[in-house]
Length: 240
Ligand code: ZN
Image (cartoon, rainbow, N blue to C red; front, side):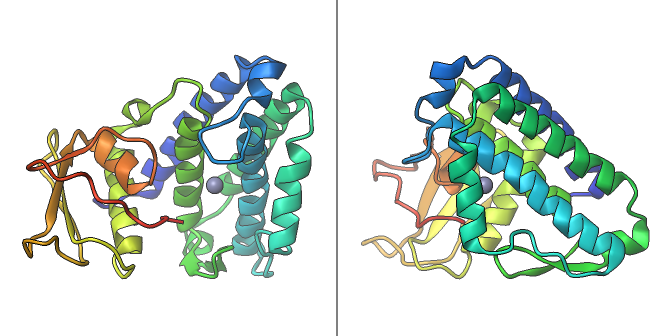
């Protein structure tokens, strides 16, 4: 599906609201508890999402001024930000998340059409139009809201966002080694295809389930997708 700038900006607002709300319900012990991401507490997740808003604001600055401003000065800086952020009290982390999200929002508000079309470089080394920034942000807030492990799952995410997420991941995974898979949501007239190695019968594996479960599977998160037949759902390599 084609996602518009209006879509991605709406997804950010909705996802941020949900994530901030979820963090305000965590007491200190719950904030320190493990998230769904291996080795990360909920504090690590929130510190990462807050730092990501600051990093993406650097890209917005780049788009606004033409002065190259990378997301992070270095991979080490990114890691340190998460590690040190995770040592702060939960209330401060929630505040950082709120403030950094607001600042990013305000910075994006003043970009005009020309500035949105300008090119910036992501932390993964991809040159993209600035319009990709709100997509990257919406992906962060929604997927990490699930990673928080505090009761939000993929069924809470908007269907149009989930479809855009599946498009994005399938495109990214397209060239990666892995199984040949056809993805068939049971609640949406769409299919996705991952090229790869067929099963022992020489066929692609068909993975089915609600769109929310297909998206969770593609994103490498806990999911409830199944296969057509009795074969287990094949493992996919890491997505990001
Ligand atoms: Zn992330």
